[in-house]
Image (cartoon, rainbow, N blue to C red):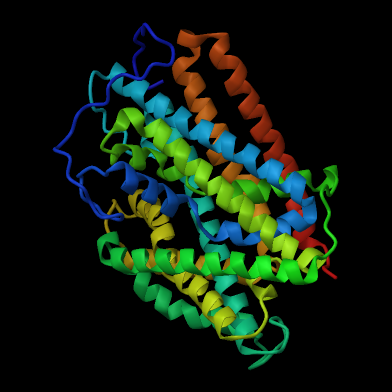
Length: 429
């Protein structure tokens, strides 16, 4: 282990965080070292966690049943919050051991501080897979939605030169993504990001309102429990929906009142969980067994429906380079001396685009990424790092809960991955 042991009088009390600069508020997305207020911290939590995963929740509820779906969603939300706080506790412990600020700014830095290059490699590998997986799902959503909006044909029916509308739209986005991903700093993307998040909130709100009216009109038959066979599928999709584990340490670093970060994070996670549950349940309630893997394709024709779908596409289009930034940080650090490398970024965008072409179903892919990569990154690694730092100080109080989380994560990762692969490969009716 890379740090030296130091006795502590309290097992879970956090040492005071080193005080930084004066309390100066900052924009939601910034590279400034200034600190954020409680409101802006909650806003940053919302931006970091809410993504495309929520759009697959109605279909997941169709598979699992709405009661089981809600139960799994809230259980995953609790474990995600708990593991986020494990990372915070672990960093605080290491910083107190180092007698001050120890430059542990990210998940990868924490892995290096706990177990050296192997720890950083494990985190880097999982972050690359997860972030690239998120971006694959973005491209799938954008291309599928635009194909659905602009043609009455099936999205996979050949339209031009043997290419389907979905494939044409995906490659149509490609040159624009090359340009956006060539931008070396996130600062220039900040205005577009904030605009896109506003559009995203408005669009999802309209979807939920539309779901209520459709439900009151149709009142389809609903399943409360889908059976144990779809348990792992639902867990994987729920884990994917909470995609912000890699951002928790930067978020805490930028929070002004760090002693209250746990409660701020808890409030943010609670609000997001309720919104996710409402979005998933209302989507399933509205369309029942007709619920599609991308809920927006259930919306009928009309100007409002088209604007909603276009708004969600705009949000994900401009979110793509932001979510790829951690991938570029890892790739450029390991292969190009941490310097900006245009051809390397474009190669990664090409690989992500090619992978998006191979995925037949949006929701099944969410479950695969959630079960395989996100479970390891969000549950297993935080518990392992916490155990390695606190095992001698806390004894069984550390071994038991951390061990349960690790075992739970491994079981979900293996079983959920296997089930999701079967679902992706199986023919759909």
